[in-house]
Image (tube, rainbow, N blue to C red; front, side):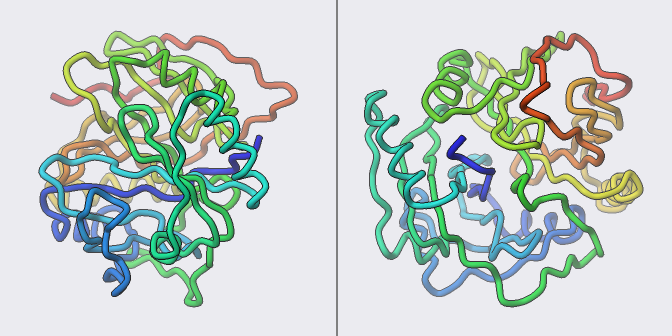
Length: 294
């Protein structure tokens, strides 16, 4: 596996300032102003408005203005430059056009090297190595500790009518494993992993619209999940799904609607995958909860 973890995501939203306030007051992310070099040239031509921190990385998310809310960029961290070269060869053999990131783009992402291409769901997908860590310690405005490290940012789930093509691309070209599948009445989810985190990306079939289903921010304790749930009431944030526990990754979590319309999952206690013993299965129900909220 040359891809190590989900490094960062760009988020487009009609109101970046409102999303930044939500990130700070509800999720507990640290919000920092965009740097002078953040021209947004790599993200649909829109300047970066805010950077969001959750650990020692300089940022794990950034916000740009967009008419429709959703993930605009997915960045995967690889171990080194050789891994970028290796994956680039596989991408080109699969007929994918790969572009080398410019010095300006690498400076914006604070990485030593980066390449990018158009991935499933039409999302700009980046592979990078040599990320510069922040000089200052991460401090959550709400005292929240997030589970990142070798497991990366968390996970992102995308909606698409072309699920099998997306799954095949990530498994056959990028080298992800199929952790398992969840066949629920509201959709069939395919969960893909690249490290001990159960999944770093997943795809669910949707014929109505294509885009972002949700992003996971994992916290360290169930109590932090409960506090976040309380904050949804305090700030009148609409829930997408009630508190519950997943049968596949064991996550104790709930889902809420972000100001951009897509979901944010706040969870704790996700299982760690042992590649040598893991068996992919099809799940048909959660352990309890996670009931959709109308």
